[in-house]
Length: 106
Image (tube, rainbow, N blue to C red; front, side, top):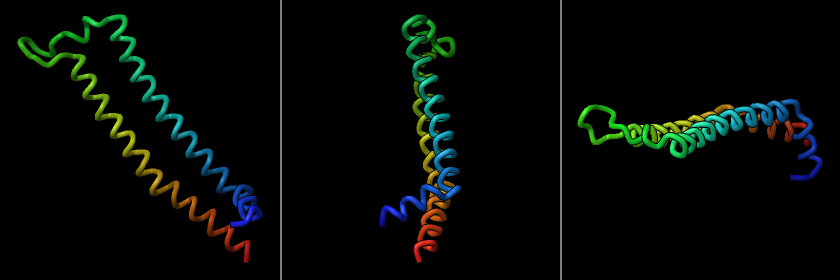
């Protein structure tokens, strides 16, 4: 593709919409992940005994283990949510932008 075509794509309002939507979604997911991860690290640092408590009387499963398993699964689900949105909404918008640029090129 030529640089003129790239400039047409960048000038397309759909391109700005794509960048804004993708950026907001990615930053939201990043904030969720960082808050949860560093929150867990802070609990480990300042209240480690709370994570060592069993979830039930006589259980070998601790609060910390369950919290970490939850976070691991939750982070995978967030990744799946991003991939789904990227493969549907973001890719469709990208294809429209490229299609518009090709139409203008002819």
